[in-house]
Length: 503
Image (cartoon, helix red, strand yellow):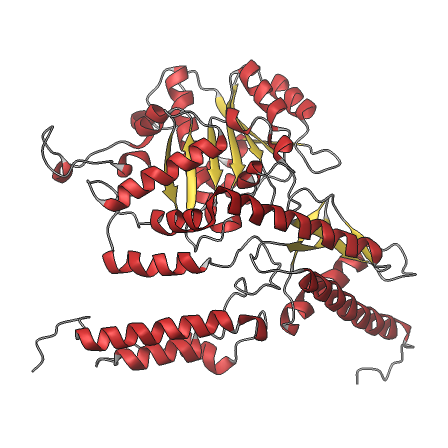
C-alpha cells in the first residue's frame, strides 16, 4: 500500500511531468501563429468536458496532462493569437506564465503577514501610485479585475459620503439620516460593471444618472454640470461621478480635468474607470488626453489588459488610504495579535473584500520588471500606431466606414457594401453576420458593439506580437466575408416569390 495520500506525487514523477508540461507550453506558444485564432469545439469534446463524471479511482497524472493537451489546449478563447482583435483581452506575457507556476508552487494567502507575497504587492502598488500621480499616502489593492476594482472604489465612495454626511454606513446600511437618495453620474459609454457595483453596494440602479456624450463619445461636462445642478434640490444627494479613461466601445477618454473641476466645485467623489486605458497615460502621444487622472479619488486599472499580465490581475487605488482601510477593516478574533507579536507585516485583508487572496502580485512584478518603464511605453506606443494604421486601411477600403475616432487601440468600423441603400437595420444584421462568420472562419477574430444604437465591428489591438500584416489580413477577411454575405443577401432578395417556394 502506498504511503502517498491524496494529491501527492513522487518527486521523480513530478520533475518529469514538470519538464514535459513546460515543453507542452513552449510548443503551444511557438506554434500559435500556425493555429486558427479560434476553432469551433466538436460536440464530442464539449460533452466530454461538460458531462464527465468524477472517477471513483485515481487517474494518473500523465494521463491528466495528456487529456489537457488533447481536449483543452486546442480550444482557447483565442486571445493568445496575434490576430485576435476581440474585446480587451491580451495574450499572457511569457514571463508572467512562469511566475504563475512559481506562485502555484508556493500557494500563499496574500492577506496578512511578513511574507514575500505582501511585500511584492506593496512594491507594485507603489509603482502604480507613482505612474498615476497618486500621493504616497494613497492605498491600493490587487483584485481580480476591473469589476472588483470599481466595486472597491465605489465602496470607498460610499464610506466617504456616509462619513461626510454623518452616519455609519457599515452599521446602519445605506440609509442617509435625512432620507435623501444618493446619486451617481455616468456617461452613455460607462462600462456595465459600474451598474453592477452600484446595485451590489445597495445604492440601487435608480441612483444612476446618465450623462450625454459628445461627438467623440466622451462624457459632456456641460451636460454633467446641468444634471448635477438639476438634482441638487431636496430629496437628492449627488455624491459621485464615474469617468472613463478608455471606454471599451471606442477607447474614448472622458475630459477628466474638467470633470475633476466640477467634482471639486460641488463636493463629489470622482472615480475613474481606467481598467483598459489608464496605463496609456504614461505614453507622450496620448498623455495630454489623460490630464486630470491624478485628481481622481479612486481609480481602477487592469494590468491583465494592456500590460499582458495573465488573468486575473486588477488594481484599485484610493487617494485617501486611511479611508480605504475604514471601508473594509475588520480583524476576526483568530487573527488578533498583541502589538509586537505574531505574524506582523502588511494586512491587505483590511483594504478589500477578500480575506484569502491569491498572490497576484508576482506575475505583475515580473512582467513590469521584464519590460521596464521604457518597454511598457514602447508596447503601448506600438499598439497606438497599429490602431491608427488599421484605421488608415479602413479609410482606404471602399466598403468599410470608420464608426468612431481612434483614441487608443480600439478601432470601431462598419462594413457598408458599395451602392447599398441607406438601411441601418439591414446593415446591423449584415455586420452581425460578418462577426459570426469571421469568428468561425478562424483566420482572424473580432467582436461587435453598439455606438449610438448602431451595431459596429470592433477591433482592439492588444497582442504584443501583432504586426502590420495581421491588420491587412483582418481587413481582407472582413471584406471577403462581407462581400460574400452581401451577395447572398442580394440574391435572396431578388428571387421571385412563388407559392411553391419552400414546399
